[in-house]
Image (cartoon, rainbow, N blue to C red; front, side, top):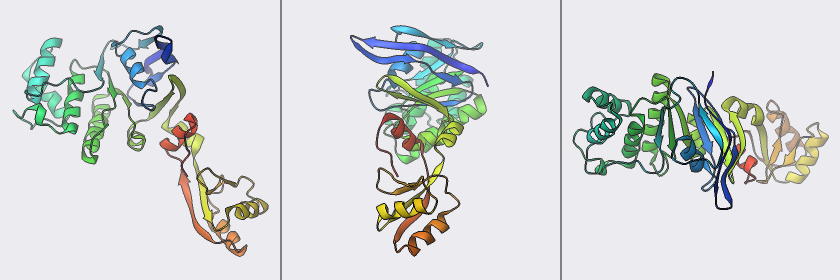
Length: 297
């Protein structure tokens, strides 16, 4: 699979502060790329530069392939006229881009699940519907890549599912590459297949879903009546990797098939086992470990 977007030392400086510094991103064609970072980390700055909305202070970005100039954008709030219908909003954008036809507008409405909204004003739409209309607006002109900044922020669970299904449909049926930022890492983990972590203006890591599984994997978590003595017994029993993790529970790597044995050994040592389970490290766990945040157990 080839890259559709790469950046080389992309930097944006405001005064003496680097909002984004030496960012090197690689987005594969046909993928959903999740850009992760807290507020002010530099996500929106990067997205604005690769969308042509902000000029880099230094460095560069490059769109690859025959559609290298086709980027659709939804950054911040969708630019919607509230007193117009979804169809009227789309028709205006289409006219501006020279690709207006009734069939084309209806096709876009169908893609984002808004074909049945009729003459209903967009101002009365739910937040999820407005976000999907914003995605439709970003699709005008048939870009091969769209850039979406926090499209599920503030949505209720139903709205999140609707947006997720829309994005999955765009990738699977249209082959559109999507870069998306989100604070909801659990939801992003269901959607994206590659990620970049931005922290204080710097790209700390870039990885795929498979990379995440290889790096993090799973471990056995244990909570007992005496964790310190339990760790001592575990190490004596052949589990030298047993440690007390930050959340206060025991973590044992490379022991996924030994939970029953561990439980029996601790009970025989007169240590009460309150809980023992296999913990799968999540995207949120990995993000927090990379950025120096609290590592959930």
